[in-house]
Amino acid sequence: MEGDVPRRANGVMVSTSTGRAVAFALNGLQQRAEMFVGPGDSVYEGMIVGENSRENDMAVNPMKEKKLSNMRAAGTDDNIILKPPRRMSLEAALEYVEDDELLEITPTNFRLRKRLLREAIRRREERRGN
Image 1 (spheres, rainbow, N blue to C red):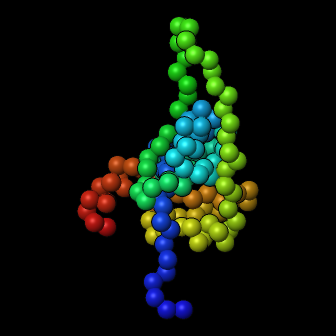
Image 2: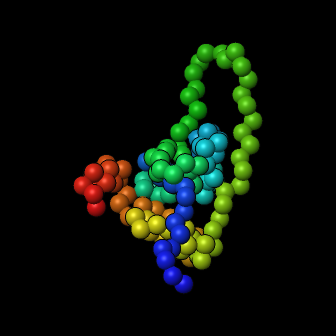
Image 3: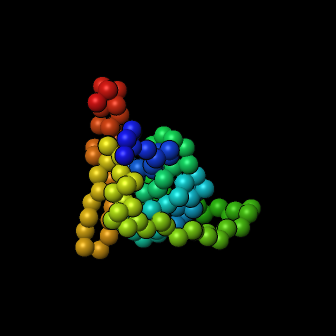
């Protein structure tokens, strides 16, 4: 085969915090992306949690809870309907990974992550041109 290897057209959604993913946050994110994690899955800062519908990478918080107050709401609570997350095989995950990303392999699952976990460090390196 000759020529450049094709790259994916879309960016990814990268978690900005560590904890367990929440259905409320994933509901808001799934409108802009295809998710790789479901509610209750453990995520950490720098972990790729979904594929962005646009070409750039986006930092997101999949642990954002619904704000609870003592005031009565005029509307009603909506039922949260989540699409099942995309689970990748080893081969699909290896094809999906870009140069600035890594694939973690454990006995139970595969996780995609950025090479540099912290958002501030990734931005600094991007400005330097590395």
